[in-house]
Image 1 (cartoon, helix red, strand yellow):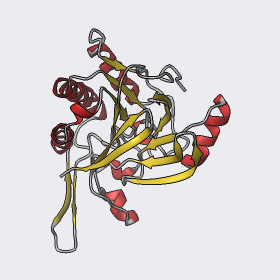
Image 2 (cartoon, rainbow, N blue to C red; image 1 turned 135 degrees about the vertical axis):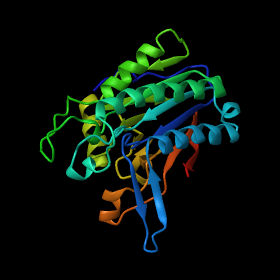
Image 3 (cartoon, one colour; image 1 turned 90 degrees about the vertical axis):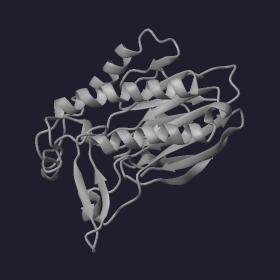
Length: 277
């Protein structure tokens, strides 16, 4: 766990924005059809990039640049489809390594677009997901340290090393940030998030006010107690990819989405799920 991000983002800002995206599953290519052969969700690399860029347009259209003085971007894992299970093989149309290179390049372009449109300082926090790990097909345990998202983070750090207003924090499995006095944790969310909050709170002797995660491909929130800034909250962020074959098999689905929140000295005071076509 990297605690270098456990610091107040700025002491002079009025409001800080938080943009969370999760479960891009880059490299995945599929169509999900309904009972009448209609397309419920179509996904590939171009759809992914179009949704991500449309998200930038949507937050700009909401006047975010006038509402916040700086921005935190949380990338919450499962950036790649990778070969986690046999069903993954049917979705991949190119080598995973090629997808890692393409996605790394795209995420740099995406962050640069956000910076150019908002003209606000940006801090990027990236955590790994279960699909990002290199593993033997259908094997457990996975090789948790062999996480392809590490490459993405190094790529972004190299691209933005001379841009003072864009800071890319080192890769980590879980991260903290103190956003305007609210202690926020980021993790992919494969396990029990309340246990995760309690574990890290006890390990580092501090109170976690909120945790953001993805993994379930659908947005939801849950109060798990009381903190100095309000309720202690769990936030699940929806996916960029939307329903896929695995979700359909489990009979669980949600529209593609991302999440934006604003923080000031009173804490988390505004939020919105951005649903993406």
